[in-house]
Image (cartoon, rainbow, N blue to C red; front, side):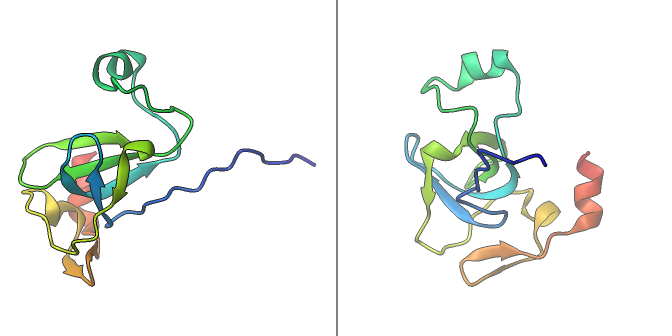
Length: 114
């Protein structure tokens, strides 16, 4: 019988508001990777604080911007403001903002992104 070790649960989930502790921006999580899933080149160039690769990483829509970002769990904390964010891609992932989080993914639009 095989045993599973080192299962790491993510601290945040899709639709949750976050605050980046190093770069001081707010955002909403649109996807979660259980471990780092980008290239070594990207990590060496972009992830200058060298966060752990074997912990969860998140795809985030950045408040007040038009881009997304990829962030290590180590650099995030919950955004307690419960205020919605502004981002042109929100409707591709969520249908509404409710009780301080985004819910109701729009499957048809998400499929078009891949």
